[in-house]
Length: 456
Image 1 (cartoon, helix red, strand yellow):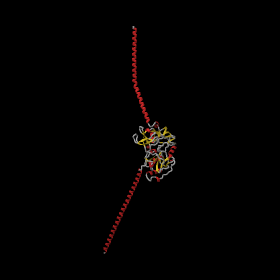
Image 2 (image 1 turned 60 degrees about the horizontal axis):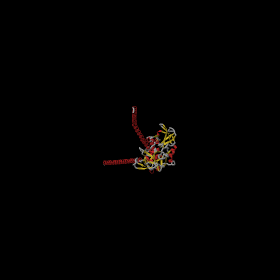
Image 3 (image 1 turned 30 degrees about the vertical axis):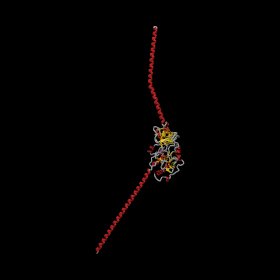
Image 4 (image 1 turned 120 degrees about the horizontal axis):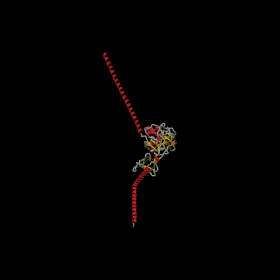
């Protein structure tokens, strides 16, 4: 091999070595870059995965929370009428109180009436300012005083208080518990496919307290029912009159008070006789004046106030006053309550005073006014009169009688004493006169003797 050839081989070998070295360096550089990239990307991937996991957990919690909430968004956004204010009513001296909110065609209390709304009526707000709110509810559209319009938690409380929030039971019967725990004793049965007013919901919304009857309330699992809100809307004037009148349509104003059939004495008789003084007076929505006009609960409230009893304002609220009695144990003076609302059958909407013999006295409606009628079919009866006031009156009578007897006795004793003293004076006088007569006689006899001696 010549020198030239050997040189070429050496150059080629050198080139190959250099290229190999370059390839090795390039390969190492790429691997290092990949490793660096992986090291850089790994925390990002882990962080991303962690974020995804957190989001998924949060979504699950949110879904679970949303699923467990008994109140849907549509219920939370409800706006309702709140007309009863017990504190305001008790502290007020006005003859007009709040059982209904009148809806007017214009922003004025003297404007023509468009309709009436009761506690818990659902309304849609069309416009609002400080004093007046324009609402639409059912067939009625007009202006109501802004103080009567509430929403949010206040609206929810009104719906609870007026029994508009109900539990619709599932397909099977459910045991009613005395407390909101599984081990609590059973106190009744909530029947399948039946609705019951809801009184309270536990904080975790797992238990619901329902009212099965006026005397039976208890807890059921929230899973055994569906929460519903029975919406009530405003009434036109004619609708409200017809509704209130229907219960006594055929008997209105046909009876007079038979005092011979009342209790012979006592607080109940006095209360009924007092109430009867206002027979024939006007029925006025929201009124509590016995002379100028009252509605059913205003009439009852004012009559009982006269005897020192403070009752709540509305019929529904008064049905919680006093103690419950059954219809076969009624006594004169008891309060009877009625479902006269055709739309809201669970709502207590009328109250009357039982006067005995199947009769009641009450402010019936605008056409009849305050009347005596048959008792009809009450759904609840409550006893307000305690008898304590009656006992107090009887005690007062006894005390007066004892006082009178004591006074009479003292007078008789005084008279007797005077007679005795007079007798003594007379006797003393008579005795004195006798002694004087004796002395006179003796003196006379002595004079006669002396005269006789002188003559002798």
